[in-house]
Image 1 (cartoon, rainbow, N blue to C red):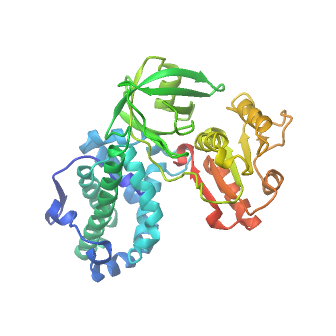
Image 2 (cartoon, helix red, strand yellow; image 1 turned 30 degrees about the horizontal axis):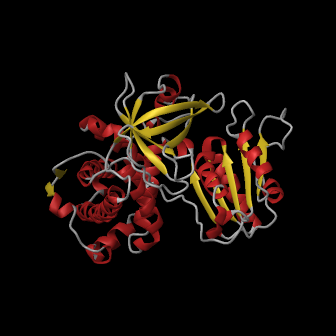
Image 3 (cartoon, rainbow, N blue to C red; image 1 turned 180 degrees about the vertical axis):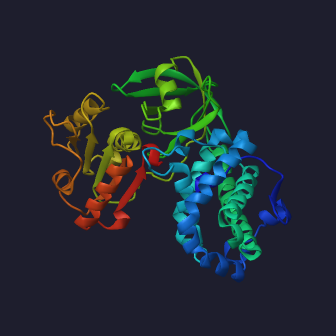
Length: 431
């Protein structure tokens, strides 16, 4: 996602030929008219180069940025900078893919509208501010020059400078709108707010829930089912860092519940391990405002099917609790298909079973990878989906790890489910 573009404070953006002022980098103009035709043509012509060298560029960018601006490290999960078993490091790979998408759509930025919204929501949750943009601009331009060498002509570098400025302006404008709206709603705030761990619940051998209540005793905003909060964590022996965690309870409670999997790695999850092993009831954590665009569409009249993999159930759990507590949706058919490794690591099985007994409109099915389980064996297949849901004319909400997501989305496409009826969010290291 493009959210990997935004980091740390800076007053200027440097390049070989001199200094680019912020006024130039962030000129305020509509996207349609802010970029010259010459710039769009140059950027478009570099698409094959970005496809070939994009990962090398972003892989080179991050170490330099962290070395020169260590204050920006808190916004990044450092495990996502690591290449594991020959696979590309998640953070540089994601940024390279985002830059490529921007380059390919430089003359049709409307195609990136949904991506921009998703990234803007993420930035607000992590308290990214306008002054956090120039550092990435400086380091990205530097990395382009380093990798392309003589191929990074003055015309190309000028075009990328201008294109980055336009993109940054788009994000700054939208994020400012979101921050203001969040701050001004009932119970809202800006930045970080202290929350007390009121209760800690062990959901399985690797998953725990934390009940978080405002330390100031004030109200909470009503989040949308499926949204998440940012958290700023101070883990002893490690740099301050931020993470996002889905709110797993329904809206309208006087608390937020987050449900966290302990990531054993390799490498092990620093924050998830700390939350599981060190954080206790009564501790205070810093939490951001609810954000996110993977939310329940309550206007649709179609049945709903939730498909989760592992701890990917958390945003879907919030949606489920909301629907089952609402008289308005008392007769809407709701289907839940959950995939997990085995019952030892599974969370919320008993809850889904109870709800299926209590509510005639709710139907839950389970798939396990462990062949010793009495339930169907995973991974989720098209047959599993057809057995769980009587009609493809259904709204599907899918959340889980990368491999599970790919398989489920492929199956839904083969079944002929319209793309507009499928909403999904990646969970785990692919986030």
